Image (cartoon, rainbow, N blue to C red):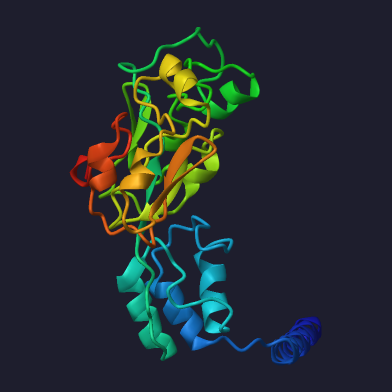
Length: 267
């Protein structure tokens, strides 16, 4: 009986000591949690895509709470999320315009041809590492759909050998931009639909040999623009989205029809 009593007392003392130690440790290493951080994290979409420049939504929320990131820094959430975070942080949320992915290639099977058969891993990056260009155009979409595979929103499909973005589904996370070995995909402001759908920097005659829909660098678009919004550099036209007013003059005058019509970009 005496042994049982002694054992009970020892266990009780050990419990008290351990409990006191836990309380002391908890107080000593206690980290204050900013309630705003938790509230911001609740508002963020939870994609953990890294498009904001942080490792994930948790890191983004912590940065916003500390004032190290803007309240409109989440490209996926856009203006609605920025507004909610602004209310939490007590600051204005001048949200940047939502951006969507765009594939700068129009080289479908109808306008260009394969120059050989690639036998290997069905992945654009693997094919690029092999040094093989599937189509005649060295700059064109390889068509294996690596961008579609990494898209968390199922917003990209390969149609006639070229990746095509569904703008309504795209959240602008940028994962496809990082995945494309040819650097054909860019994020553009959602309202801007006058875009050069080509990446070929060769001279015009060479472009026409490999793709009927390629930019020939003629400069007609640049001459037609009254807003200094499109220029030809390295034989390729490019749009300055800040200056572009979507007048469509460059679209109508482009002989190669490689500048997209505003209504031609699929939703």
